[in-house]
Amino acid sequence: MISAMKKILITGVSGLIGGLLARHLQQRGGYDITALNRSAVDGFRCVRADIADLEAIKPAFQGQETVVHMSAFLGGREWEENLSANIIGVYNVYEASRLAGVKRVVFASSGAAIGGFSLVPPYDAIATGRYEELPEAFVKITHQQVRPLGLYGAAKVWGEALGRHYSDTYGLSVLCVRIGSVLPDDRPDNPHRFSYYLSHRDSLQVLDRCIEAPDDLLYDIFMAASDNRWCYYDLEHTREVLGYVAQDSAEAFR
Image 1 (cartoon, rainbow, N blue to C red):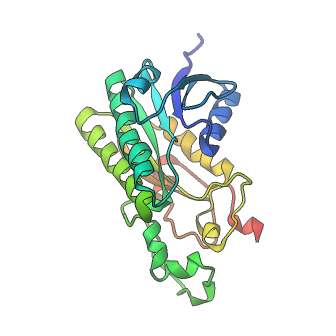
Image 2 (cartoon, helix red, strand yellow):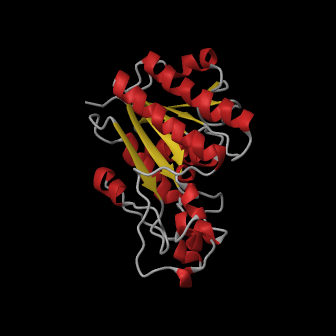
Image 3 (cartoon, rainbow, N blue to C red):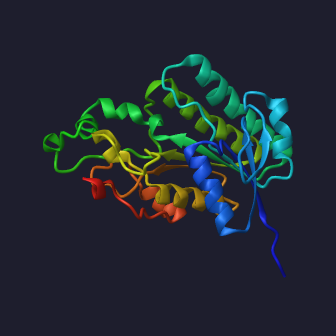
């Protein structure tokens, strides 16, 4: 008996991580992938619409089991763009998912949700590469903490909180991933990114594990970084719940 393919909608497939994930799942097989994107995406069924327009995006959600929401505006300070994509757009994705009976939303949150810690000791020393100033041991930042950096970081905290509401009120499974630094050439390019670097391979692993997590996992937040020497993200919760074990390390690029 041939099992049915899992129907997955991925927003922002024209972006770096969205594109990596869509191609990864397509190559692995077993998934019926639809892209929700403002521009056409080669190689995928694509619904072209802006996530800020709820009525326009609703058709993309019909019949989907899982939505992976990768689309976002990445600027930290611009209010109108953050409002449109990262606040209204996130609400629209959750609401369209609810209306269509989607089972799970994997929300691409960000390390920016706790990025404000990089401005205070001892994390500021890590962010600027002043490792000699660090104590022998320091407390790592967990998924339960919030200290956003910029409007972007604050918008990501909103997305996590709104996901909690949709999970509690409507039974929608919402798994939020605080994604570290994922770059096109897959290598850290400044001292701060050496701490929260997340390789392409590790980013796909953590998203994979969210997509395939048990149905009764209704809400959670996961820190996501590679196995970096000076990482101040506490990855233990991600390991315990998802079984995530980072395969790569920023130290390979020293």
